[in-house]
Length: 302
Image (tube, rainbow, N blue to C red; front, side, top):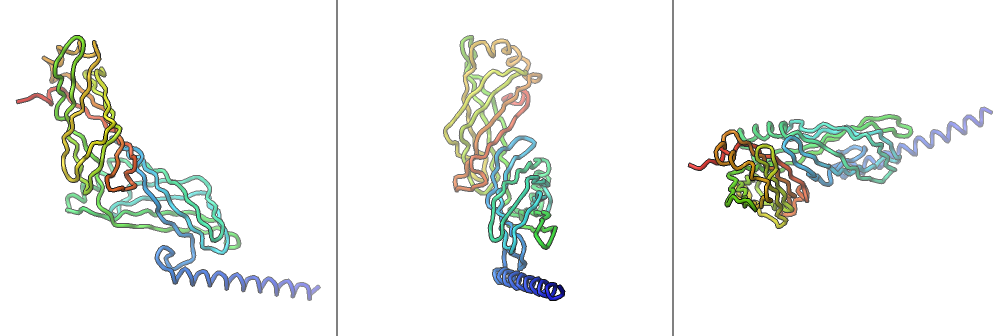
């Protein structure tokens, strides 16, 4: 019986020694590669793409595609992932990925992380950068997840990925005038004259543009412009969006539109896709939505 125990312990010891040698070799390989492995044997994270899917007045919706590589000698499981996105060392997004993650030894997988960025937070950071005259900054993602690794048990890993990039700005749209042209009983020609400000150091296109015009709470017109509109870099681009009001939609509003502009509110909704001319994947078919409010007196000519 004792002899059997001795043999079993010997085999266990050999197994431990073998596992240690295997682990040491993998660790040495990781140290020789350096870089993303951070000179340690642990899961490696890498940002693949960042897609801006929707831009509203209050929130920017994004998805971050991340690679998880497992150089460990065993597979691992994780119940989820906690991640924080930084801009200029300031947290702007804090989210949790609640789906289980499982990666076999020597394998990798991609996960897609949804994000909601509050424009108020972004504007605060951008204002600080503007005041300091900084036109590029450090963007970072810090990810933390609890792994269930065979033999080793539960381990918490944290990794931060950083990259210095130009400062990105959201396009801003200002309504310069709503020209009602000829007012008639059968049709009224309307042109919305807008200025699009692009503070970024690259141009892009607006495409599949759709818009509506409401006066005093009543939608009187809508239109679309599917052709691409070039928005110049670091400039204000004037654009005219023509629409035709259907019969009867503006007739009841004529007195207020002509004689009570100060107390007559307008609302213009605007939506389009943003495509970067230089192929920036972050803006690939990003959806942009915004709402502009004011009164007709804002367009009063001198």
